[in-house]
Length: 155
Image 1 (cartoon, one colour):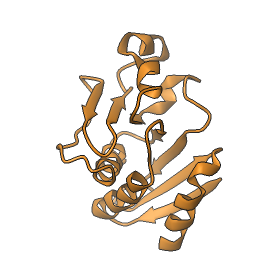
Image 2 (cartoon, one colour):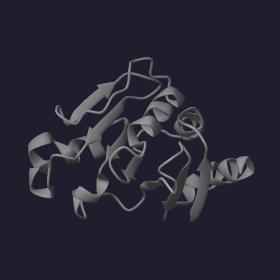
Image 3 (cartoon, helix red, strand yellow):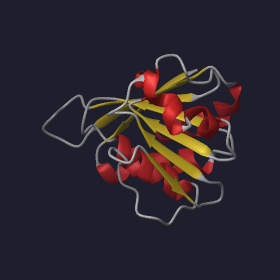
């Protein structure tokens, strides 16, 4: 399944993320990709809100992983400074198999270590002069079909 959603502001990107977060459950993995500054952490803020996380969400670029309490735990991982060879040292597999939702920024750096049933979200900025974003959601899992229908209704 594939869906493209356009947002016109950071707030709207957060709202889309929140809708996604409300649909998630323990064991879900989200792989976020996109250029530097395109809004991966902004999307994660919305996902966190949808999971009931009240913590301030910021990029774990230097700490690599932030854990947050919500309806289910949120494991926010940033692979910007890592390569696939470093994944074992941060317990990457344990997070994927843990009892929470795992959101991975710079997921392309996981080099084939991601589960098949994940939700991929590629963020693009078609116009560098505005806050508009194109969010391309893709998955091989039917589990996200209802979410895709809900988000498609927003467009």
